[in-house]
Amino acid sequence: MRAFITQQRGDNEELRTKLEQVESNLSIARKAVAYGVEALRRAKGERETAQAEANHLREEMKAAKAKGKAANQEINRLRRELEES
Image (tube, rainbow, N blue to C red; front, side, top):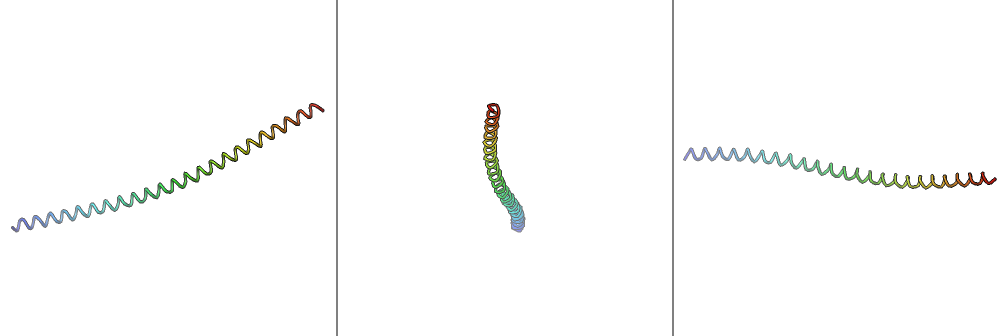
């Protein structure tokens, strides 16, 4: 009977040790998940910022092309006017 009780106590200690290890691993995993979630949030924010900046730059490029086209048209008009004079 003593051997059984001693063995059961040893098993309980072993189970407690395993439980502590599992709890520790769970804590580490939770921290890793929280870190990953935060990293994803930051990446999403950065992606949205980059997309907004890209859209702004596209609009600026369109405006610059339109100005360049208008300037070329004005240059051509002035050349024709100069040739006619």
